Length: 500
Image (cartoon, rainbow, N blue to C red; front, side, top):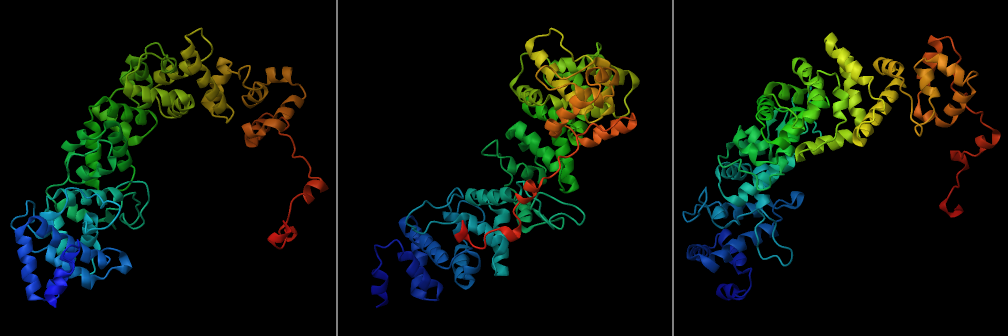
């Protein structure tokens, strides 16, 4: 009867499952047949291999609360038995037959295909402690490509730096990385750090979620294989969240060792935008923008004043930043973003002016700030000047002292299609001209009544109080009985959807 039972599924792909199940249950004859099939290799071995995965699938291997560990364990222990024929470490049945990648089995009829990634999950969280340790030890030494893929996939998902993980960092810190717990390495990180075959050069240069792996293992020699612009951005992001001190030190070293133009351009751009780590990197490594038109502004914003004096002897730092010429691919990205946001440049310049600058540098910047009027320059430069003037006027409307002084000294006013000059004249306290154009304040009140969203009442109140003038901000319109009754209250809503 037993023989007939074995023969019954002879043509079934699950034949190995039935025989292996009997073998794992203690049937000596079934175990002998399984060993013969495995030693024979080829289709016989594949029958046993797929049979093991049928058993694991039937026991809901790594399906959380549905998993049946008491049924999973015998099949896993069978796969962890030694096999000298395996071409990978450690030499066990598992590494002898695993596929070369961790890709999920194809869609369709399941025929005992292995789920490689679930092996990593079992090494991290399988209920049987001893078996979990054996799997973790295997992962720590294996060179099997599919298992290495699976380890990288799990690592990548925890190193994305796109969510804050509570409890991952030491007390008092926050981190975007899920590879530590309370500042101590997780089980996955211990496995990855122990495996001598990781990290590997990235299969995809843009796979920046794996950048942290060579940083953790101090393999900075692999960083040039990544896309350098994406690498620079990820290094700065790593420095902006909690990671162990030695990892931060390697990030800083990697930023200073960047040589590719794309990577250097990103660091220079972030330094111009005020990133502290990027500024430290460009100062230490001597990084420079590729296009000379950006150099004076870059040196000013990164506070390299000796070099700035040499680069901007004519005090035209902002005018040079308006210049549009032939740009390389790396700096075109920087140029495009900053051209669209000329206000960012003015933000940064006004911020620098609010710090302790050498007198000659401050005078140079103030002179450039007051020379943004129309000049008959090429159209691209005129466009930049106009955008910067608008940014200066916007800051003056917020009573930023350096912007107010520049507007008054240079006579900047909104252009023909940029709105009325009266709010600017009032906020910058140019009352002689303001009184000539709006002696009783009615025009300004009319403007503010329709365009109040462009300004802040507090700024007008401050200027009016300082100069003993009436507040020009229009009083709120009184609410009529009709407007009061037009608002539905909770008690007036229909009591059921049937009323609609």
